[in-house]
Amino acid sequence: MAEIGIGIVGGGYMGKAHAVAMSAVGAVFDTKLRPRLEMVAATSDASAERHRVALGFARATADWRVLVDDPAVEAIIIASPQETHRAIAEAAFALGKPVFCEKPLADSVKDARAMVAAAETSGVVNMVGFNYIRTPASQFARKLLADGAIGRVTWFRGEHTEDFLADPQEPFSWRCDGIANGNMGDLAPHPINAALALMGPIDQVMAEVECVHEERPGGRVTNDDHAQIMCRFASGVIGHIYSSRTATGRKMGYGYEIHGSRGAIRFDQEDQNALWLYKAEGPEAERGFKKILTGPAHPDYEPFCLGPGHGTGYQDQIIIEARDFLAAIAGGAALWPTFRDGLAVAEVVEAVFASAQSGQWTPVTQV
Image (cartoon, rainbow, N blue to C red; front, side, top):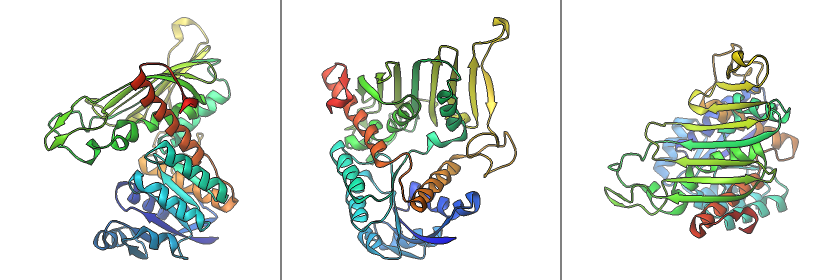
């Protein structure tokens, strides 16, 4: 086994999740590379030191450049605001250091394309963080589709709905300012990624993007609260994607439903350890959706628990990401989802905004 020094830019919500994942991944998956939490970067010396102590890093800094340049930091995880992603990634690639970047890849298509170019020119391992698609249930759904378990797919519906801004009296915050911080920059990339992973490329979109509560205590909202997207996939299949941060009652409403000529699949992240499968076979009176509880027979479940139905959780998705990132580094080749996969999501987001402005179907290739 060999150690690898990990540097994480950002010690907050996602920075903590990645630090915990890197601390646990070797024991869970018996990885060839064993992470060492070398350095964490934050916006001030005080917050960086606080994260260092809490998360178990060897060192801390208030300057991400110090982290990237340090020879003991051999791989970089970017968990900072999206407007910082490009500069950090380009600096790391210039030094030949692998990069894992949280979604969305960047705050604009222009920067996302530049990051892909830098990654592919350097030839260095790169990965973007879309964790929800990595649950054992969703991995199994991908396998079912690949195996043709529900026949020819005819329709897709995906969503990511939460209610953290459903209350119009919720105070104005950074999430309410700037297009990149709105629903289309925060929540929508997840169901778009799910659609691409489950169904393949999206050819064109027809979309509406809306701010539900334009005024909040403390400021005027400058970005979107929710969006509805009709889409046609390159395969010819039609579908619909909805994302919202004002969906009253929904806490983690990442889900999808897929219809096929011989069956259907349903999934809801609020019940993430179950997949619902319908097969059009047998007597009509006995047909119905079957609830499949995930267990050791499903992808990436057994390393966490030997008991079927006991379940995995949010943090386990991040540990699976950590396993894949380390495996890519050890193997010397990027694994899905790469920066190019992150760019594919960014291009769909851009097409959604273009369609919402024009009121017309918009090919993704036009952006």
